[in-house]
Length: 179
Image (cartoon, rainbow, N blue to C red):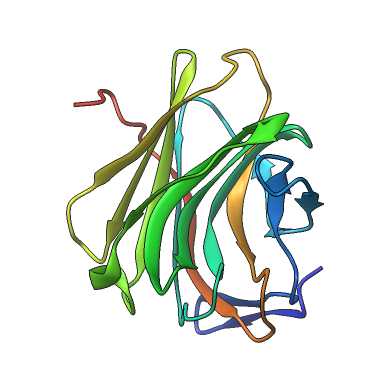
């Protein structure tokens, strides 16, 4: 449960609990599964988009989209403040979590949108800042028969006071191609 979640001017403002996170085992040896998620059934005929902004400035502040099959199989994609700058990335978890990132310091202070589309046995995750071009973040394996839920998430593993402003959460037309 987040510290607070309030609607204000067509935005959902979510303040994360200090120490909240989503991670399973790899490298760190622990399991955390208390990220703040607002998930609904994901109709596989549509893409899911989540748009948000926040003052990311503390180690591991993060927000974006969570896609969840169950407690051992999930994907979180979005931005995370790590090692002094904003990173765009994804964590794909199938019993164990992995983490891929790339620095996007020019995205700081902008509204960020994450989009996920199911494609055969995979999920294509794209992102953009403002009205900039979509970038492929990750093509991840995904059980084509699995029922999944998706929606916004945020967490603050190392501090109190992270508030994320979610401005959109919608089903859209899915991506047709990877390229």
